[in-house]
Amino acid sequence: MNEADFEKLMPGNQKDIKEYLEIKFRLQSLTKIRIGPCDNRKAEQFPDISWKHDVYIQSNLYRTIDLMNIVELTWENKVSLGSYISARGIIENTAHLYDAYQSAKRNLESGNFDNLNSDIQKSLLGSRLPEYKDTPVTSIVTLVEKVEKKFKDFKLQYDLLCEIAHPNHFGMVGHYSILDESKTEFIFDRADSMSADSLGRIFYTMMPSIAIYDGYIQKFLDLVPKISSYCKGRKSTGS
Image (cartoon, rainbow, N blue to C red):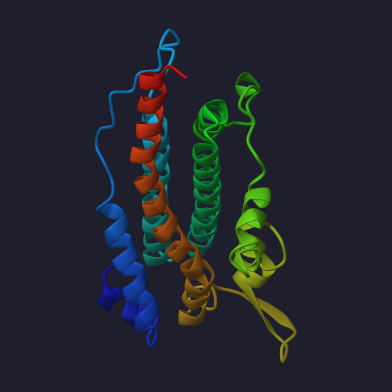
């Protein structure tokens, strides 16, 4: 959707709309088609593993842009639940990126190659499936709580979206019906969930996360060449 489309749906929120579209355009400009060379030979004693970080960044970036598109597309198709769930996904992606960046930065600064390599492996291959038992995932709530330590109300915004994404009161009765107290009836329609206020709630909860994501994706991209230099330095010194 463009700025005019958003303005029709959510009048009076030009600032958030403009910021959202500017960030989305900036994120789209960071995407790559190819990353390489991706040399993962075990025989290489001093490998350059910066490509793993680059692959992670691009995978996370593509997913975030997709989630932003889904927020818009499901709203346009009057399926607001999809917008809420995708907005929650953006917050989760932000938490995942933030943790991966902090880990890479910490390991690089301490010169701990083994952790630098193993941590990015977990970010790339982490799964709850039995066949991936060597790369278990960290609970997304744990990652959200890590971001909360630096950015106040990050978890609150996540929890607000979870209330609708999960089959709780707000995700079921509260999302699909309105109580008509005069007739003591529940009226099921999408008028409230598709209102300008509803879209405003989505923006209220996801915009702080999108702004954080915008800052940390660039920090992570700036870190990749430093990781590469560090790896090449190990090879030249043989340590």
